[in-house]
Image (cartoon, rainbow, N blue to C red):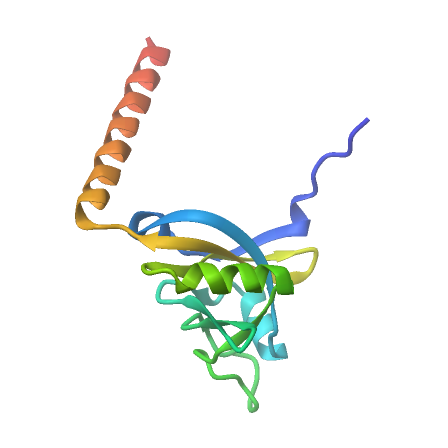
Length: 159
């Protein structure tokens, strides 16, 4: 008999909800992060923001840039810089693949969400290409039509 999934092993810290609207997401990767102790404690409190963040590969290493992890409130000294560059832990094969992919025009690495997986802080990255204005309008139209269909189905279920 299969065991039920334990939700305590996976805890979402924050998400970049605008990423799917601003970019067309192609391929996703999971990366670990090199963090300081106060950063981990702050993440456990859910004090992080990915809105202006992106990832960059330089000299064969991946870094998370612009992610805001608030200073830990319970410490008196030795707190971290909230916007510092954080090293990402990826396999060398993945780094080589991403290096080639990000050199193409218009492609970038965007963090989608930060979470704890079995007690380790992880970030989900997506290889993304920026959407044009008309693509964003199309996304809005599709979301509106899906919403209307869902309302109609719920209305019929009540009758």
